[in-house]
Structure formats: C-alpha cells, structure tokens
Amino acid sequence: MSFQTLFTKLEDHTLIITINRPDKLNALNQQVMMDLSAVMDRVYKFPEIKSVVITGAGLKSFVAGADIKEFESLTKTEATALAKKGQEVFFKIENAPKPVIACVNGFALGGGCELAMACHFIIASESAVFGQPEVNLGIMVGYGGSQRLTQRVGKGRAMELVITGKTINATQAMNYGLVNYVVPQSELLDKAFSILRVCHEKAPLAVSNSIKAVNAAWNEAVNGYDVEATLFGECFATSDSKEGIQAFVDKRKPLFKGH
Ligand code: COA
Image (cartoon, rainbow, N blue to C red; front, top):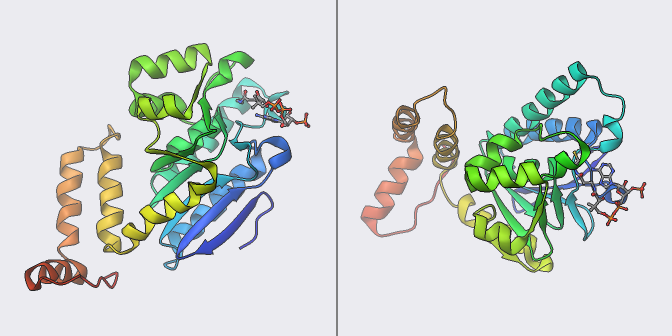
C-alpha cells in the first residue's frame, strides 16, 4: 500500500496511517484528502485490517488544518464543493466498520481537529493543542466540525471555540470530554494498541454493529433505537454469538472466528 502523502504500516492487525507532510505541519491538501479516502477504502475491504490508528508525522503536529495555500483563489461554489468532498472523506472514517483511533501528537487545528473528531475517539499527547481557528482567516469550519464538536463537547463550549478561534491544550480537551486519554508523546501508540488489542479479541460483527449503533445516535435521519434493535438481531445470526454465549456458560474464554 503506497500513497503520496501517507505512510502506512500494518502492525498486529492495526493499520497505522501517518499523515506525512511534516514540513507543512501535515496540513490537509487535496492529495492528502484523496489518499485518506483511498486508504479508507482498503480499510473497509481488507479483513486483515482489524482497526486503524491515524496520526501525524513528526513531534509537533497531528494536522494543522486544511492547507490554507489551496484556499487562496477559491470561489464560493468551489469552496462549497470542497467542504462537501472533505465531509465525504470524514464520513468514510466515521462510518468505518472497524475501530479508528486518532492519536493526536501535537497541533490538531481546523481540519486537523475535524479529522480527529471523525475518528471514533481520540488519544492525545501531553503536547496536543486543539482548536478551530478558521475565524482568524475570515472563514469557518467546513469538514463537519460545527456538528461533531457540538456532539462531543456540547453547544456552549463548541460555540465558544468556533466563534473565538481559541485553542485548548490536552488537559482542557480532556476536561471537555473531547479526548479519552492524555499520555506522554512516546506512549501514544502503545496506549492505542493496548485498547485495540482488547477490541481485536471480540467478535468483529459485534464490534462493527456497536460502532454503527453509537453513530446512529447522531443521525437524525434514523431512529437510533430501531437501528440498535436490528443490529442486535443481526449479531444473533452469527456463529460468534453462539460461541460467546456458550463460552460464558462453559466458564471459558470465547474464541471468535469472525462469522
Ligand atoms: N496550511 C498550509 N500550511 C501550513 C498550515 C496550514 N494549515 N499550517 C502550517 N503550515 C505551514 C507553514 O506555512 C509553514 O510552511 P513554510 O515553512 O513553507 O512557511 C510550516 O507549515 C510551519 O508552520 P509555522 O507557521 O512556521 O509553524 P509555527 O510553529 O510557527 O506555528 C501554527 C504553528 C500551527 C500555530 C501555525 O502554523 C498556524 O497557525 N497554522 C495554521 C492553523 C490554522 O489556521 N488552521 C486552520 C486552517 S483552515
């Protein structure tokens, strides 16, 4: 798997995706967005990939936003189309049938914060900085940030962040409920791996249906309770559910086979 702007590595069934433009603080240009979309297609398709970690190259930045240089000559119509395209890529990440963790190793600004929030949850290094500084440029969030930030931190805090453009550090992000853990930079991937190892032991359909059900809570087009009931039913059509329940009765560890 080779991409112009991403470095990828499969380790213990986790695909580590590193956004690799460190000289530009890993800013999201159109090539990065295309590469992210293409790599996510492979995540959906390949059973050997059981989970994903997204991080940024270098010690300074996860992603410092969309590439501002590409905004210089954008028209109104082009900007709307760009936002729609970016949102599509982030929906692909959010709706992935396998766990996706953002390991935020520095600046997560603008599109970087939006990318982190499109992941299923966030682990931050102590040096992480989060924010939506688009208003400083006379523009605003465009890759789903107004929606996902509100879902994650509540209306008041989201509103303050997007209208002031102020940044928050890892501890504040933790207090806001934006991140699940704050760890030293050197322990970022280990922390993600320790969580993902646990997920890998579970039945894959139970994990992917659980992701779908939680995401349904934020989808106004569906009734999340109905979605949950249907997904719950689907689990009972798998051999893995029989194995999990039988293993409990037998007082042994279940061995899930993925069907
Ligand atoms: N788009 C394009 N290039 C970016 C970028 C972005 N969002 N963020 C950083 N860069 C580039 C800089 O232009 C610079 O490139 P250069 O060396 O060719 O001039 C390089 O990355 C390093 O950034 P620099 O600003 O010199 O680093 P710093 O440590 O002084 O500041 C930040 C770091 C993150 C505070 C600063 O880069 C910044 O404010 N970036 C923009 C954040 C933003 O507004 N994001 C939302 C975009 S919609």
